[in-house]
Length: 264
Image (cartoon, rainbow, N blue to C red):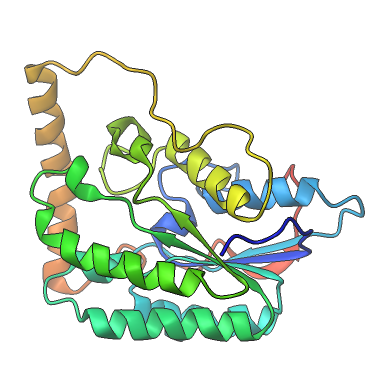
């Protein structure tokens, strides 16, 4: 259920590339900014005392079992009063996904974080079938995950950002060239969705479609498809076949709950 507007002193983000911020603008330290950083900046600006702390434990490529085993205990120990939790989609993308196990682990994470007193924000996945050919096989599992997350969201202390029902995410301009990660505009809209779920007044309609633009020509589409196959899909398939992940050996970008200002 939506939360009331309250001030938060600490925020921890858990998840995979979605929460790490892949394909948003780059920060001076070389990390991607991402919607979670944008949320942290907005919440830090609300603190008159300047006392706001932020950690982001998300790492690209992580499966829900890795999020559970590697991120849950450190996040719970930080004792932040706000947590965002997004995970399971990397599992869904893989053949033979055990959706019951995904739900069990995601639910365990959510309940343990909530038991520590934190407000827990979760997400439904966008609908890939409205923008990616061949993704229809994923829809039954994505719909099941959507129902699972929304059921959790009805409990006290939880909030859900429903990306599935937002028509703006059908637009390829909200996605990076790899078609899997959000563009800067996509991250901006997710951040606004989180702030709205936390009871903040809307700065803009984050669900609204972008202004109509002329569709790309056939030649441009074919070139873009070929570049995507060569640059993004091929390496992704290669990692799946060899059991590797883009996040192997990569540490979180903000592993500790440290002071954070809107200028950070």
